[in-house]
Length: 64
Image (cartoon, rainbow, N blue to C red; front, side):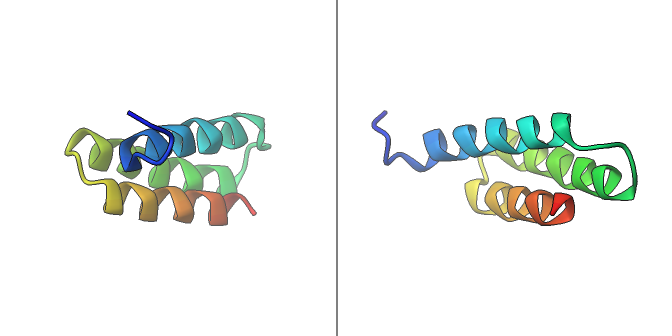
């Protein structure tokens, strides 16, 4: 896979969002982000990159 592969970019995005979530303080924003992150994991398992990316974006937004 090259760096332009959607699956690779999704995997990198998963790592980035997980790192941001790990650093976030406890609270409702972190709880909301966790739900989106878990949904992204399910979507990734189902090989649904579009849904995975939507959930990762929602998780990042929840942490903002």
